[in-house]
Image (cartoon, rainbow, N blue to C red):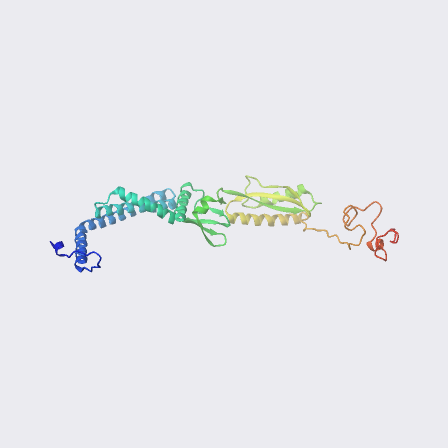
Length: 336
């Protein structure tokens, strides 16, 4: 009846009809009032699922914490919480709008998830890499690792990145995708680690005696493992010394490695000094000449540092050229 009282629109004219606008607003309000019970129930459903999601997260976290996998429990607990809450929101949407079908909602979410996936590709990649790291456990919290130029102790594994405290006290936030796709050196992956140091002795010194002294001093140091045993052997004939390589095993943490290295170097230095075994400096020989010999530039003739020719040393260039600066044998001063 009311619709018949509203004048019809005229073609080709812009009609401003307040009655039609009020009628539309009135219809919206009527629909909202009819949906108030549904909205109240939907809110209760969302609140219930929110509380349930918190309970699910707590149970998952507690379960993995009892297995000493608290980091993995936090990630999976957060994931289960998000899924539970998303299910509650979908159910609430269906309560508010009974005409909304679950299949249509899932299809819409599928298309939306593709767009979200492209928009947040890096975030999702880091999250998945972090989850795989926590499941496979190539390293654990407290391990000392090296990733690229960063080396330090793992403090925490988050959904996006792994937190590493470097040895000089800096905090490195390394994306999980970088860790999962690149080589990682786990310094504390085993209980013990081998260290080595090269020691140079003089060519006139006894190699076997030096190796025996080095091994004796290494084995005296507390913290050096006896199994595997330490080693010392000739390694290189360098320009100024004979290189002896010393190897030993100790605990794999960096503090132990650094301290053992310092103790070994100090003990070996003092012991070799007491045994009168030389540890020579880098020695170099420099040959000088005035580039005035007649054979300069001739690689087949004698020069400084080369064996002397059978017919004696070459004559200086000024004698060969003579007063006129010529190399004609007729006017040049003969060789003596």
